[in-house]
Image 1 (tube, rainbow, N blue to C red):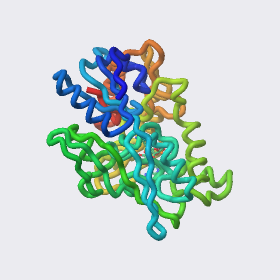
Image 2 (image 1 turned 180 degrees about the horizontal axis):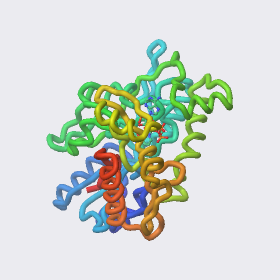
Image 3 (image 1 turned 135 degrees about the vertical axis):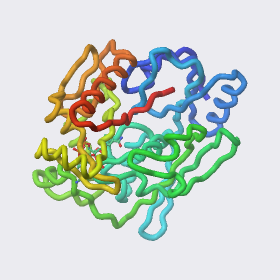
Length: 336
Ligand code: NAP
């Protein structure tokens, strides 16, 4: 492993804020991960895992411990009839995996093109986009259980996946080492979401995973800020699900409010609430603002601090609650 000292967390997270991490270990293999954890044990310091830091708010106070940066890049492929199993190390860039699958012409994760982050982070919050969730292709998650020091393999059911949720989000003793996906040579494009359907109307049919991936990346480029230009973690909040009654009451006040029924009630696009009900598109306080093209996305300008982002997000949540009575939850996680 490569060990560095006193590394600004702002350089390891896409929101680009946060104080200094006392140690950072670049882990390019499972041996490196074991070594870094042993180092933490001997130094008696806490540890956290980071992939590309694209869904994390790092504290201004920094982290007096060791950050394990997942950097192993390995993808293995196995074919069984029309099914193709890809096993990718946690450090593989998520979009690199999507592109790899597209090159093989296999279906199942193409709508998840362009999502920042690593393979290891994907199951943690069960990433999803445009009608596809990563849980629908995952067969196994291989982890290091730091409580027992043993390797465990979780089946899909054992991962307890939910909407942007899994057991790994709540139980931090597991370090995800690799993930296995079941993809198919015979998939059918999933084009029901409005943005993709509109793309098809303008550009014609999408017949391969690569074509769908290209379409999704072009849609995302219009709606989400460029990580090379802006500090951001993408959608800062989850889209809330409200009860049927609450939705009915809101719909009476805001007849245009979209709603998508699911098992728990009706999912409401928070971007609509922020934009059309609260007029917060582009709203700014100091160095923090809501992106014009997609107000669910919080942007942090140079000079922003984690405390400022935290206060801004709380203020937005309070405004949503005051007007709609909806409690919104953050999608972005605190580093510690
Ligand atoms: P969008 O497509 O405008 O959708 C906004 C909300 O409406 C989402 O909650 C979405 O559900 C729901 N929705 C829209 N069309 C739907 C349909 N046909 N059936 C059921 N539900 C529908 O959202 P956006 O902000 O531009 O983001 C595009 C996609 O990327 C969305 O799917 C969003 O969830 C996803 N995304 C995921 C992450 C992540 O995994 N961390 C981060 C940012 C955005 P769903 O959320 O279930 O799709």
